[in-house]
Image 1 (spheres, rainbow, N blue to C red):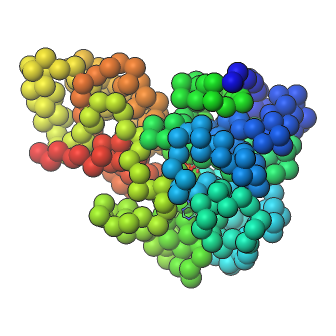
Image 2: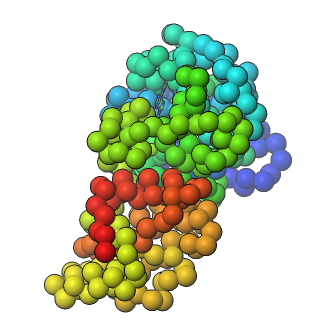
Image 3: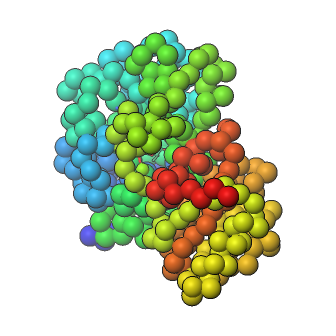
Length: 347
Ligand code: TXA
Ligand code: MG
């Protein structure tokens, strides 16, 4: 399949009538799948009402069929089509964070969406992305759109159109190139089907921000105990792993350097994942700065690109600094721990 690449200027007026968006929207109505930029990561969009379209998403990504898709909408009224009830706390969260990096789990209206899109569950995750290209595409096609991250299953999520092409070229109908995404980690997934909301996946909206709006918010126990079964099916899979083994190091930079030196003496090519503040302090084969530690948002924005760059550099082993788990640091450490397969070295 020839994968079309449409370059879109995010800031032109009337994006919905932009010929590239109209072209991509028509492909969605024809049950083809196309990648779109969102404010978090690129998503692989397909018609969530169609088994055929949803199957194409799972096939292109090599995604296990038990992992449901997030449904993307452009208008709140679309919820009525496929959500059974909207609890008050969900209403408050939507008012504050939509459009934005927050996915809310609702009880589903039976039969309204492809069963494959929700992996047969009686709940459905929904979000309204805050990106002009995504919103224009959603409005132009008028469909509820299933959109997982547009990477091959297991790889780091894509934050540029090039990342999408690296994984999916030839397997999807097209990609709308709206430049690099902003947030860099996926949306926060919050279950609002019980009286107290529960975070199933940390992401772009922090626990502190949610609590400021709805009071108490719980965190799925699987996020702090790797032996618990996660409530979000996708959270049980190993994800984001670079090709080389990645170790998170809790210790001083001198200690990390010592680990690096030992491996280099064995003749291995060693990478270090650090931040701009500390880049000059390390001597390794490749020292990559992932944003600025003093601004964790910049670390989130650069994280997946940094993990992908290590693959191009063909290192044998990677050591990474750790980050504080406050604010978006919670999502950063969650993704890094998965990428490392929970391998942590304590000094
Ligand atoms: O930022 C994002 O959310 C991106 C962009 C493209 O919107 N999308 C994304 O989708 O990260 P995906 O498929 O990579 O991750 C969806 C996560 C998975 O862990 C999945 O198991 C969970 O959401 N999920 C979806 N529906 C669910 C449901 N009904 N109950 C529990 N978890 C659900
Ligand atoms: Mg994903």
